[in-house]
Image 1 (cartoon, rainbow, N blue to C red):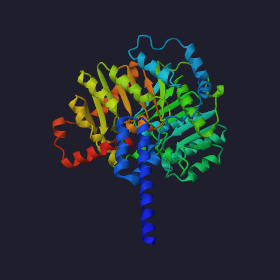
Image 2 (image 1 turned 90 degrees about the horizontal axis):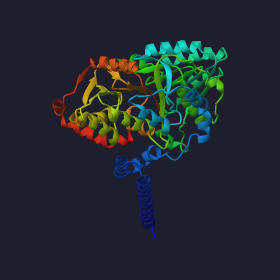
Image 3 (image 1 turned 135 degrees about the vertical axis):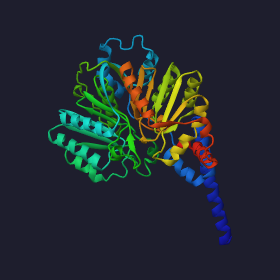
Image 4 (image 1 turned 90 degrees about the vertical axis):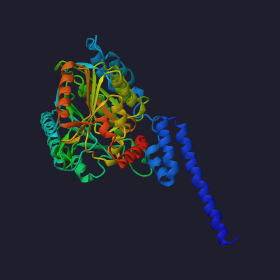
Length: 478
């Protein structure tokens, strides 16, 4: 046979192998038994963008649900001292309207124990949060555990880094955990300076081709600080200058909280679990869980979720909270790409007469995600959900408050990524005082918004409508 025939046979074999790979990948996606929406999204990507789609699936599509970051025995050892403290306290939720939600979290989440006697301080701007954080870092005597999605090499990051170095020189044990993808642009020298001072610094799920290509999609989005096992921070703020200055057009509006009390045990357990997942060192000493007297009157429960667990803890808990709302349910989120279950829950309670309010930024920091968020607003308003667009700057706050008795602040956005792919952490509060404080923050922000009208919203250009609808098809993958 001549060369032309051999070339034809070679090309035919390549095509056959190529389509076999694509069809096999589609078959694997179907057998994975994910939600039909996500399955169809991947099939569409693989079918219409076969080369790019297969590469995207290699990096972002493979499921980690059957993996385990830590054994049941490890969880039991980490939870031994928090459980002892939990069992010695009197019942904290007698007669509370959200008892079922508390019980749900405690049943499905190894770390989520409710504790009474906590004090909560709320921050609505990064300057005040950084001021409080730096003061507590300077007061540290035994250890500092710090975990952020972004720890940037800029004025803010260097300020915190230098404060940590000062405490390390005084003998304080410091561990820093940052997300590898969130900090891709940060030069290694930034962390090297901490390492040279005896600070233990690790990146979470380091992405290196080809071994950990699938890990790029599973990111640690948590923002947790624990100081001496007695004081903790959790919320939506990272350590970067833009969280102070904003994006150039207006302020950066965010929410973070400082905790004192036994609820810090939950933050400590979350950090030590993540540390074990990367370093394989299980730290369970009593010095990380010191006795803590009552500091206030707030009942708090720290809840984590991750892509490898059996359940979607925070997402399922939010569904319960939404469905249990009797008077109102207010939500602040920078990204609104809800799965079908959460969307229907919001619509259902709004249709029942509950005052449901959703606040989003008017201008987003990610064009594609922002367009996808806008595609859901017509359906929300049709069901009676009031939609507000924040126009004073970028709204990055992840805040929810319900019926003057339940509120939550943390890292979880109202989107597929937070619900399905990220490692997240939220603090849930079960008291009227905290709920009213966060409600007042929401209502103050509402004054810097304009409320969307369903009639006016429907008059936006066909170009915007088409763009939003196309982006929405990919929402499960964003």
